[in-house]
Image 1: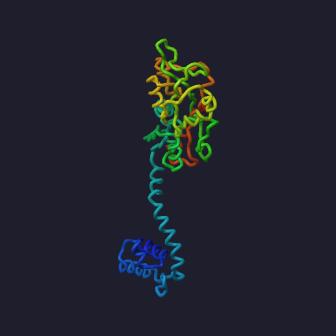
Image 2: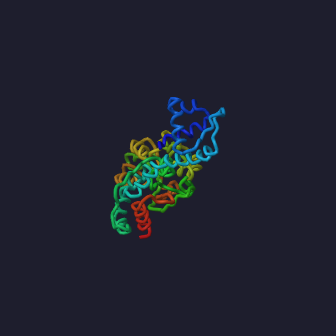
Image 3: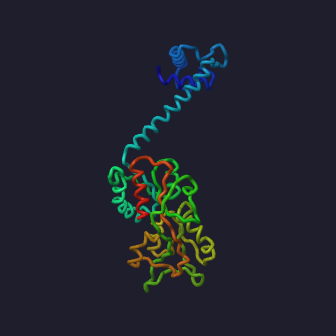
Length: 310
């Protein structure tokens, strides 16, 4: 028996024509007809009524069509199922994180989890290989939906829920952060650009529509930003790019404080206003699908929860 016969038969059952089915299967008609005949000989019964035009399935052919479709579909799923089995027996951890968190928060947080993970893991083992994908939030959400990552690490705010919050994904808060408006300093140390409703308008450095941080900023401060006497002079979807522009003295940017520790300490950047109402508090959340892929992934989730509770 040759499994190709099953696909030949389904092509013939769908087209009702030996010539068209042979063409679909990239075969000559005589060779195609021989394979259909060989399938019938193997089963011991005719599947095709060749006297009808277009050709018709016999009762056995109608039954076998459903069987063949099921077998072909199962066979097509085998590679992905084999990969899932392989993944379940490896210690690899796949993580997607937004760009802003990948730079500063992720390394420190991962280091803090390694000791916790060894204590909560059933095998007592520490974290194994890690694959980190750094991207915009929308792409991270897609990777989770497609089952290509085990976790997503992102900023969050109740006013701007993501598709991960709407789906069946589970999450735990693993940190806090804040979007703060910053500017390069003038020679006297004061901000070169200030957020103010009076005086010279300050140029603003904003996030593009695909940015998760931009989504939060617009949801929380959108109306106040519209009322501000200022103009947007530059947009980008990466906080790191806006940071570079702010350092270059191009305007005011709202950046995660987790990115600004050294900049603020060294006064390379300063707060553009003392009014804390212009700051946006954020949480940092770890999202996971309802089913975890392997023991390492389960241990990592337990460690993240344990660190929050400690």
